[in-house]
Length: 249
Image (tube, rainbow, N blue to C red; front, side):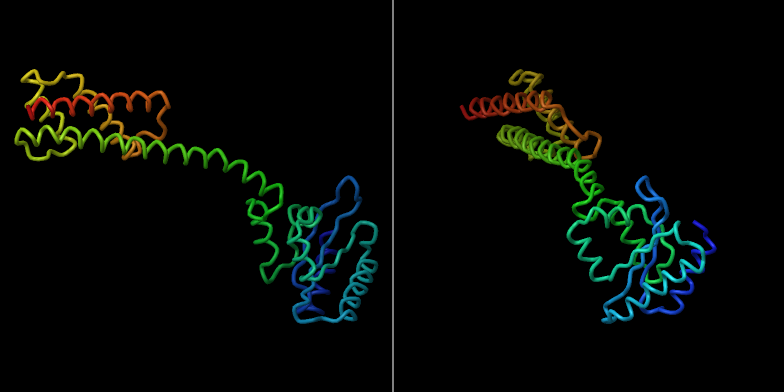
């Protein structure tokens, strides 16, 4: 396409109909179409009549002929309200026109934002939107898995902390922080051979994992690891219950 002639065509039409021509863009030639296509979007929100519309179409065709663009340029005219209906109903041809289009005249900023939304997959029913959806699905599953994991580890950590504090309080120790629980268990129970060191290690494994998740050092925990932590927490809580019974006796 001759760019100077095309610019002349657009300048003349937009100068004569500045309030009617809202946007103009061009789509390149394809296998089934020899020439390029110029798409005119006419603003009918001010209720332009059919006479004005026909006048613009005839004027554009005459200019194409006089400028020597006939045979290499096709012209398509749309009313704004009709074009929105095509978009709303998911017209594949319309989306192709937007996807492949290059703006030639767009003073109101209609075309470029629309094209941006389309390419970002934010227009429902388009292939871009479908691609965006399928790309988001694995991320959503990862988020669900992470939330589920955090919930489990948080519950396990609360269980072992509460279970550990009960026997410590029974022997006169003020409720220690989660961080200080292992030292207090060693002082009051492990050294007196009332508790095996392995149970303190169970506690530490659960709390360390919880801290790593909380600080973002761990994103996902393998199911096998979660099962292992559940087993350790269960054994720890059962041991604390047994310890409490012995203290009470």
